[in-house]
Length: 193
Image 1: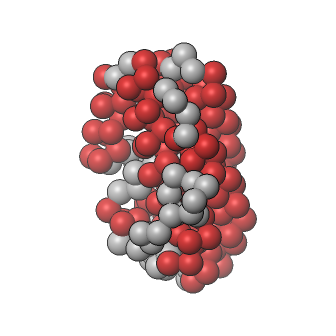
Image 2 (image 1 turned 90 degrees about the vertical axis):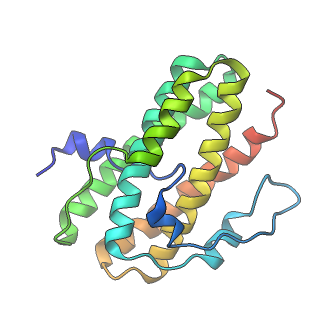
C-alpha cells in the first residue's frame, strides 16, 4: 500500500496527459477569441468518459508531473508571473493529490496507484530540466497548457459518466480548479517571454 505522502505526489492532474487520456477525450479544434486554445467548456462538452482504471492512472501520473515540473520552474525561472503560477501549481496540486488519495482510499476500486511518471512524462521532464531562460519558460507554459487541456477533458469526462461514485464526486469537485488553471495557462501564454 502506498504511503499518503506518495499519494500526495502521485496525483498531478495535468500536463501532457499520456495515452490513457488521449483515448478518453476528443479535443475540439475551435478556439475562443480571448484564449490560446479551446475553452474549458468546449473541452468538457466533447470529453469522452474514461474507464476508472484510465482515470486513476492518468490523474495520478499527471498530478505528480504537475508538481515536479512546477518545482523545476521554481528553480529555473526568473519570470515573476511564471514563478507565481508554478508556486500555485505546487500548492493546488499537492492539495488535489491529498484529496485524490482520500477519495481513492474510499473508492474500493481494486486498483493500485501507479508509481513513477511514465515514459512520456519522463521525457518531457528531462527536456524541461535541460532548458533555461525564456526557452524554459515558454516550454513550461506550453506543457502546462496542454496538460491542463487534457486534464479538463479527463475530469469532465469522468465527472459526467464515471462508474465509481466516490471518484466521480472527486472529479466533479476538482474540475473547476483545473479549469481555472487552464485559464491561467492561457493568460501566461499571451506573455512576451
